[in-house]
Image (cartoon, rainbow, N blue to C red):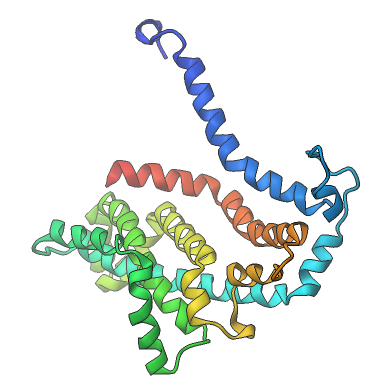
Length: 282
């Protein structure tokens, strides 16, 4: 940053930016930190007055209860299967759709993109009844398919829009060279375009995974059997009619948060790069 640029900035702008960043960080991390601290407290300490911020006698008994009071491992396995399945299908279909929009000479391309955006604006609750009736008539309730297919449809708009921006930034000459060497158009897509658009693929994949991991309404309605519940639904079962074991619920929430946190931490640079590059290219 040059001295001239510094001179035109209003006084206190750096402090305001720092304050805004601090607000964002606190808003994002404080709830998770509070849940973690709550999971390490006993119930008696949790209701003690005045409130203690740090656990005076940290305990892991709540995590043990989280796995024994409910089949948490089963809920975790169901969530992993559903989220991974819907992510893979979403990326495959979105890549085909994005390639068609970015490369083929489609008429009314902007109208198609507008329809994709509009399709993501319908409230999920308005789609619940037709989705439920469709899967009931097909005999697919209480199966992984009952969640993977709707999650794929819900994730397609954002995945497609992210990938379109990346595919448009890849030179056509690379695909043409691959097709001259014997690749089909689909072969050029999977062997050339998709690897070059890896940041966008990672970004779209993580967005799809997190959306499927966190979804509650469809999971509650379509997979009601005990063996097919996902984590968001299973965690609600820890509370009783008159009791709310918040330390145990917090421990279960930490178990649900950790996989997503690790996923984002591992691919943080790719996700941030994918979001910024996709925004510039789109």
